[in-house]
Structures are given as C-alpha cells and as structure tokens.
Image (cartoon, rainbow, N blue to C red; front, side):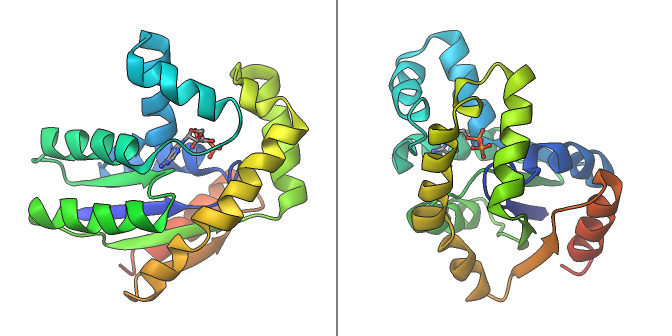
Length: 190
Ligand code: ADP
C-alpha cells in the first residue's frame, strides 16, 4: 500500500493537491477537516461539539479524529492506499496512526510537506473564504489562531516522520501543476 501523509499549514494547498494525487495513484483521500464538516452538516452530536472548536480555530480532541480515521481505514481494507490530509495534526495522532495502520498490516510510506510562508497562507485562506462558506476562512484573527495551533501542536509531527526517515518537503508556491510535479517526484522516491 501507498500511505501518504500530506502535510503543511492551513492554506498550503493540501486539498487541491490531494484531489490530483488521489487520481494519479488511485488512493483514498481522507481529510479530517472534510469528515468533521460532514458531521456538522449531518447535525450529529460529534459535529456539534467539533463545530465549537473549529469556529475558534482550535483543534478537536485527538480521540475524535483518530476514531474517524480508524473507521475509514477499516472500511477500506482493499484500497491501494490512503492520502491522509489534515491528519495527523498532533504527535499523539501520529503515534495512533502508526498503531492503527500496523493493526491493518500496513504503515505510513512517507510524509510529504508543502512549504508556504505565512503571508501567502493568510492571503490564500481569505481568498478561499470568499467562496468556501467556511467561517474559519473569513476572519484574520481565526486564521492566526489556526496558524498558531499549527506551529505549536502540528509542526512537531514532522519530527516524528523525520525520526523514521520518512519526511520529504516540496515548495508549495507556484503553479498548481508545477507543485503537483514536485510532489509526484517526491512520492515516487518512497
Ligand atoms: P485547514 O487545514 O485549512 O485549516 P481543515 O479542513 O484541515 O482546514 O481543518 C479545519 C478545522 O478542523 C481545523 O482548524 C480543526 O479545528 C479541525 N481539524 C481538522 N483536522 C483535525 C485533526 N486531525 N485534529 C484536530 N482537529 C482537526
């Protein structure tokens, strides 16, 4: 199996690139942000709890997202592999992912990180906010909270994969196709 962790701060382009990677490598795209937004749209108890945190730019509890990913991995045992987008976002999530993949007889193939500076990220998210309907994309303070959560809790996840010799990074600025080509070059070395 090819199990990719697509990494990078909010607005780095993970969703856009995931759609292209999924097609090319025939993978299942698992975005915890999308899964949580589906729960909110369906009005579930989990969604209601998650919404309060997401509306403040804070992370939802590890157990919640780990449970969602565990269900999806179990339900897709015949897949060629997965793209994990927006997950793992904490070191505890990364450790849990290692365990749950091992239980399913597989492992993370590698993490590929998209590098984009904060100024560009803020501009992209505000631009996306004009059409995404996401309230967390429309307020500079909320975007700043998300970037802070990323720096304090999520950036250390890269070290988890560096320690396993599974980390690659790619410049996330430029044309979508160019970035995709760089990503594929990194993925093909895994
Ligand atoms: P972005 O990366 O652009 O901020 P996402 O759709 O990945 O957007 O995430 C939106 C929000 O959903 C996050 O700010 C956070 O509140 C919540 N979320 C998504 N994935 C996770 C996760 N793995 N752990 C905790 N919270 C998460």
